Image (cartoon, rainbow, N blue to C red; front, side, top):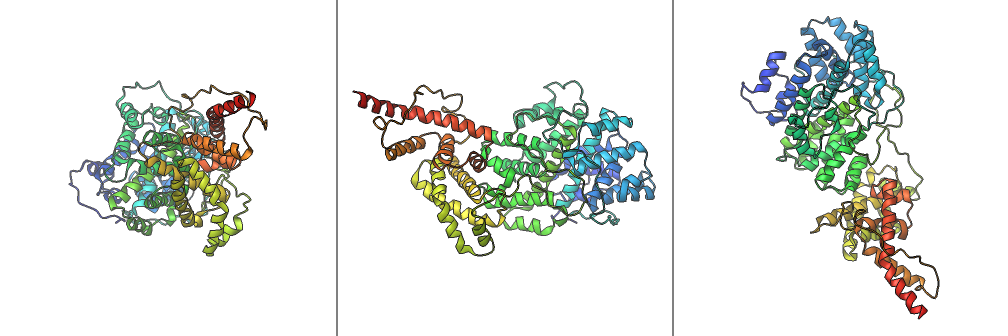
Length: 596
């Protein structure tokens, strides 16, 4: 019935009673999760609130949305269930078939056709949805409540499609064949909208009070109430159901850790080009002690982050489920088992990836603004409609001219001995990077071996989106950072401290002149500067090592450290001021000796 073993739950299990009441049966999708009843309870709550409760949209309208979306996702399980539901609701089979094959040719009212058109666009290419799409719904008589409900049903549809694929749920009824992949065109789209959002799309009502119980729970869980929940004030019952989903899926740490789950949310959100959700979960990870450097690497390419190999496999699993659902299957589940993950942990990973898809779709439909300034923007390079064939997601980075390209290609082709030449080329820079992070020569040498080992292990996945040198330095800096964080007490590359921007104020900023009678020899001065750099806090030390001592460009240094250009420049400026202040007494003393 699925990829996971099942256990018997009591016939009085409340979610099953809910499904029997509204559907007449308990779908295999939920029976497949009996190892974790808390997941079923949370999912049943949100299905009941969004689908079974009659509000702005009719049950038939909701089922039409779910069917059209499942068909275009080529999800046989969800399409089969929705097909049967529409039959039970009295919709003619010819109309149901038309919705599956091409809803624009179906016998629907103009308003219902516009509704399905909006939701398919949101579900399949959410980054292109704008306020204009919502106003088109208003032209057909829909209001704010129905627009919000359309967004919720679409988000839930994507959640159910991802969940059924990850579980390997067997259809409850004989499936109707889906139209072959590659024969649909998506709805017309305009220019891409920045996925940070441009204001809530469905207009919202007056703010709910902060003592609203779900808000209090979210504040306790995240440290604030994200705007994505505040934007749903027309439906406080839905916000409550979503809060229960967070409570059941994200917060428990008896299986996967909170950090592992946040990493899944982060990686999937980046894969879906959702800047808002990347920013939120990077912020949450910072609160639980994960460096912004690590978060950025997990978002852009987790294989560059210094994570345990089993965590890399976990993220590969989640991304495969999101990016290539038609190629996902039991071998992917079995692969995680080989890395020691239990069935319950893998089941939780599927739920997390599904939740990420739900939140990403929801945010794109609501268009909520960021809770704080994103570190970087994720946006597809083009939103042109194209056929729904197996398509590799385009990236926002183009290959660069790389002097190491030929050597890298030879190693990737099996000439492993060539990797030694790459090591020789870059060992000095890697060592000095690690020395800049760690401040200890012996530890830097040990970390250098780890860096080259990781680079060799993951070189097959290097795609040339940056230079090999930048890629290697990013691995080195993250390896050093990981060691740094294991120290007691830990030294940080990004947390505030006594030498943070708020704590440091330059006092001795006198000018230095290159007078041979007043300055040390060039060699002596370089040694003095390098010693001064090594005494700086790590987050300033490493940027000066790469930018000033190793002469990497600003762009290369920012890419290697996972920083924005403006953030890097701020650190360079502050680091140089701190260095100048630290060295001023030496030069002042030398000047006094010369003039007396």
